[in-house]
Length: 510
Ligand code: DMJ
Image 1 (cartoon, rainbow, N blue to C red):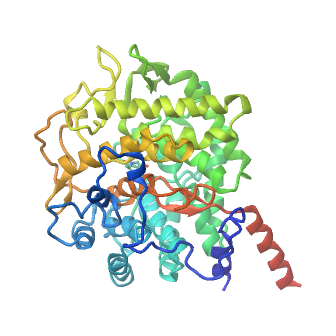
Image 2: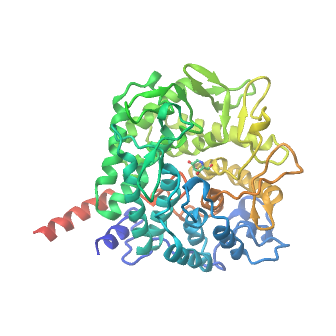
């Protein structure tokens, strides 16, 4: 069948591998997986503590009494997070499918798969976020399909993709942010100014939609996202910047607030990743990415009095010297894009990526828990610390660890593994609760107060990026995979693959 041809074709020609049978990634066996952390961290890593970050997902520490795997999957099933997905159940299960598989937790992975087969109902009535459903569910299902070759995931992803299409029925084709999957009606978030759509939401569909077209052989998904790009290219951008709010009716910016953190973040990430996922053929995405990065550097990147590089927020030309935890993904993003920048900029981009990652690490080291706040500031005497009570929480977010993982892969500087290990220890000490991991309300207080919430992205992103940080580079190599913004790996669509497909199609039609 054609989908099997496509899936096996995605494997990189560079490593000389041809896979004729599925799956693309063979899960490691629990006993044989070899972790290299001991080699770089002799001080803190005894053989016992290696296992904290082993496939058993942080669970096999000395005083662990419950089976590792059961904790993860029980949590996934009981604490499915309804909030982001409007009645759509099982966010934690879908978000953890690939993590479980990659870590070789096959018993739990199989339980999760059975849940998808028997209980995942995509006809929910409620307020679902197009963005969250796309990055967590479509991304999670596609990634599970590509990793395992299970048809179940492909058909669920296609069914869901089709249900998202009505959100694009607007005068401009810019989708609205909210959709009822049962009825197909869609509307804008009540809190977004003047019925606008949000840059980080409508700009974070490209990777999944291109792959939806791949697996369904239906170009409509690619057409929808290419139309968004066309409009963004056409409209005038203040100082070359992309504001966070756009009207899906008029196609104009609604206000001039620019952020590389919340509301803007993953739009930029998807530009460079679209380019990389196209095997560097998508020049439109490349041009937009480097153009945007230049504007960001000229207008948002700042150096603090203490010498820390950070990304400020921009409100109609006025800078707010605040950096959100969310914006810390940008170290990794600038890092993976460094190599394809103008030759005279490559080292500069790598340096910038390292500086931002360093700043984000500082936001962790300057707290009592060694975990970072939701936002930190560089004004009124503050240097990478939160000054407002409302910014002091940590909800198990991945972005800082994500940048460590990319910077480790790009430089192999052991400090990134050291920093990742500090985060492991802090998570163990402050976030572990009896039934899993919880966010905390104030990173500056060592006697923590838990928020009793384990976000699904902890399973899909935070744990996966930590696992990859301490694994060898050939586990999901960056030459073959891009991670969507929820850390779900999607294969790079290699040029040689497309050529091969075209030849085969020609032969068939002859
Ligand atoms: C995730 O759902 C995604 O990474 C998204 O792009 C931003 N926020 C969360 C994690 O913090």
